[in-house]
Length: 69
Image (cartoon, rainbow, N blue to C red; front, side, top):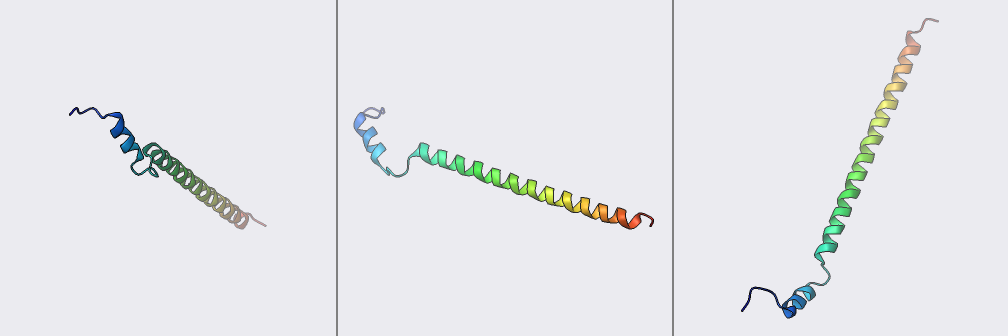
């Protein structure tokens, strides 16, 4: 018996759990991870923008209070 798989065993292996293809599963996981990274990045940017706007508005309010009338 050789260690090299024959065509018959290759066909059997490919038909086993046909619904789960290794390449397709890997591609799906990678796509999922890319989407997660994108959403986290967007959330982070939105958070920084909100904080920046709050600092600008609070800074402007403080400047108005400090200006002599």
